[in-house]
Length: 364
Image (cartoon, rainbow, N blue to C red; front, side, top):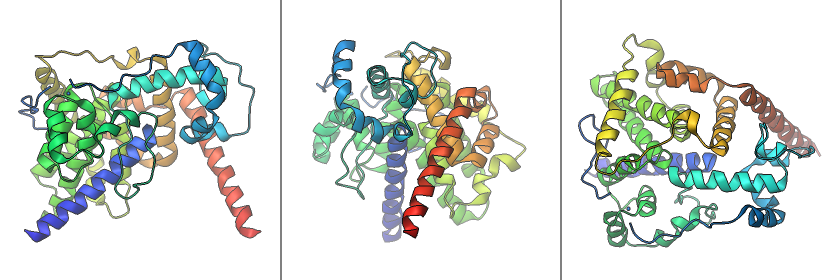
C-alpha cells in the first residue's frame, strides 16, 4: 500500500510537470463505454474576458513589448520592418506584424486559448512563477480548499475544473473524470494533455510489471493516439506536445514509443471514431459545435503553424513517427506548409545564434 502511494505521488508530480510544460509551451481513462456524463455540466460567476476595442488594443500596444518577447521569443530576433496588417498574408506574427496589429492578433489568440482551456496551470516545483495573462481566470481558486474546489466543480465551473487537474488532493479518478468532462465542453488543451499523460503513465507502469505489451497496454497506446488526433482535428497541438515530451525521455521504454512502427494492427482510426462518438453522445444534452480545422480563426491557424514548427525543431524524428502512427487523415495536418518550413528555419537559426552567444560568453 505504501509503495502504491509513493508511486501514485511520483506519477502525479510527473503528470503535473508535463502538463505545465505543455501549457507553458502552448499557452481514470476515457472508457470506450462511458465519458462520465453524470459529472455536472461549470455556471458560477467567473471573470469575463475584457471586451477591448481595436482602438484600445492599439493604444495598449505601446506597453506590450516585454510580454511579446516573453511569450514569443522570436520577437527578440533582429528587427525587420513590420508593416503587415493582421488581414494580410503573413507568416510569423511577432516578426511580420507591427505592434498594433500584433496586439490585435494576441487578443484573438487569447480568446481562442480561453475556450480551449490553454491556461498555464500552477506548478508545485515552481511556486513563485507568475501566472500567464489568462491566469486571472483560475486565480480565485488557487488557494481554495478541496471542499471549496469540489463545490465549484459541482457548480459546473470550468476554471475550477482546470485548476483541479494540478491538485494532488483531488483523487486520480476524480481528475480523470474532470478532464473527460472538460473535453465534452470543448476543451482541447490541458484536458486532452491530462488524458494523454494518464494513459502513458498507465502503459509505462504496466509494461514495467509485465515486461511485454499486453492487450491493456495496446488499448492505452491507441487511446493516446485518439486523444492526439482529436486535438489536431480541432487545431490544438497540446496533446501532441505532451505525448512527444513524455515519450522523448531517455528512460522511456523504446518498445512503447516504437509500438506503432512495429505493429501490423494499427487500430487508431477505430479508436478515433469511437472517441468522437463518445464525445458526441456525452454532449447530446448540451450540444456544442467546435469549428473544423479549416474553420479555425486566423490567429488560431497561425498559432497552430507556429507550434507545429516548434515541434519539428524540438522533436524532428519523433514527429515523422507520430504522423505515421496516427494512420488517419488527421496525420496529414502534421505535414509542414511553406510557412511552417519557414518558421522551422527561423527557430533553428534563432537557437543557433543563442548557442553562439553562450559559447562566446563562456570563453571570455
